[in-house]
Image (cartoon, rainbow, N blue to C red; front, side):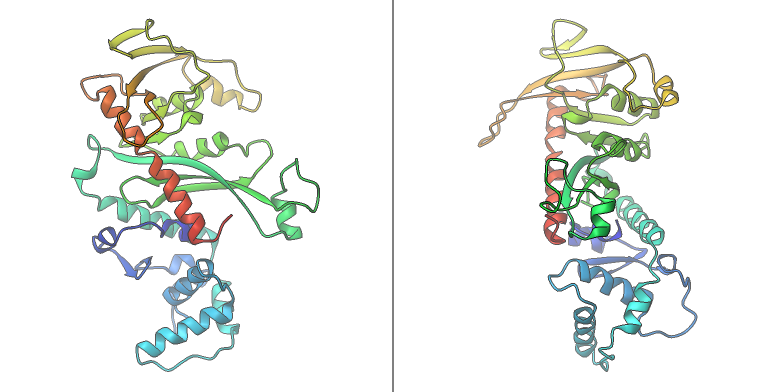
Length: 341
């Protein structure tokens, strides 16, 4: 997550930060001790926290991911700064890298996101709220026995003819492109669907955020959970949902407020979680014509929590939802940068 959170940030965003260090493409917490199992540095090291972390990250976004290549790049950097080269023996670097902890990386990534988001100008917020985009993707992994065991290949492929598949769902900040949080799991299996992973991410959002998502997220259970926790949302209305603008409370032309009843409990849902959700919710469904040159989409139907039409018109909601596409671009940028198929 730490590596993913560093991609897609503009130079303007980086320069606005105060409590973190920046270095080229990378952004680091001033105190990175929590990333490593050895904690604070009490003696002078060649491979300090920052150096080790930077070399570790560059290994994953360059074509040659060997430790030897990482040290060669480190020596090139030292030579440019008038410093003597270090030994090409990879032992010291590998030992330092082995002390990087997963929990430490995740906490540092969240620290970086929080600092970045706190520096977003108020003028860029939407009605004073931060906008996040949620989206899912899949990618193949190296065909090793351990990966095949943890991330089985697609069931339609014959054994030995496919690659391990991983499913990932990410929350992005629309303002900065940084990852808020993400979850990954095997492609198949109970609790590994996109909505199951997304529910763990969406539950962390608060009243000061608006989440954008495609039609998959216009599920009753997703919307009810967000309403219950006070988080606003704008989703694409699911095509299988029957929409009749003659029913409900009419706000305007092709714009109405409807009451949705809670469906029966899905087989995989926890009974306690199901009972906590309200028996019905009120949402706003709006249809807006689009006049965007070159776009094949001529009309957009959104479903949102913005009941009060005075706070947001249907055209404003449509334009806001269109920005969801940046989430697709953020994911593509990360997958391209890290060589993820």
